[in-house]
Image (cartoon, rainbow, N blue to C red; front, side, top):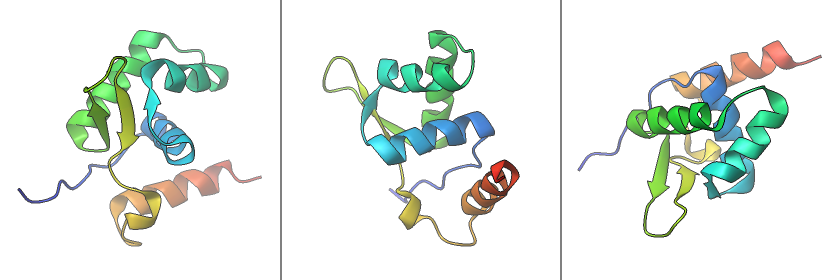
Length: 98
């Protein structure tokens, strides 16, 4: 099967990707505990965002254990420099820079 090409992530999805890139495999609860410190958000919203990200090919979910673990589908270093994902990430970071 050909490799999936991730679709462009939203700002909320970038936040989750950054968590996964920094922490590695994480459960829904672990991800949510970090996200809710940054934004007022419910657990079901975090879950729905992860489900959408799975459909987009941005994250993978390991269902072999309970609870399931989410991982970034690609490492940041694996993204081509000119990809839409990287360009969007750079724009996002430049907007947040002081």
